[in-house]
Image 1 (tube, rainbow, N blue to C red):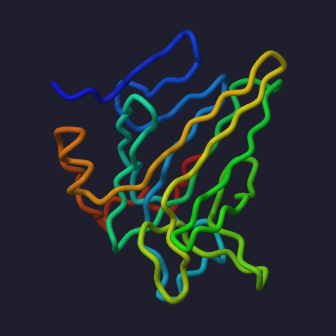
Image 2 (tube, rainbow, N blue to C red):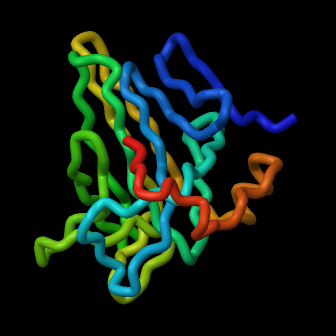
Length: 177
């Protein structure tokens, strides 16, 4: 049976039983999918069309992102004594810091605009290879690398294929954290 969730008490990192929430030392991260705008830019928080699944490997976590979708990262703070620094390794080799306290909308651009978090590079969006989530507590620092993959790669590793993006699956205005 495919391993959809894991828990490590030694490192305080886990994926919930649904395979959709990543917890790191008192912070919970979700990866909310949506159809990106033709401009590739994010002007406001997009309505989520569902949460993308996660699959833990020995050294990282993989996240399936189709070519026609983007995602934003929801963050819930379960503890007040933690801080997070998130960064993205882009397809062009740049490493950029991602900004947000309860959600990360996308990649900050030199123009001051925000580009969608997408797996593939387009004229408007730089394309993301991986996201590093670094969580600091008063006693330790924990880091998880989330690598973006195609649906096919995810299926070969996780043993199941993600459901395709459904434009009618939205929360009808309700936005998740």
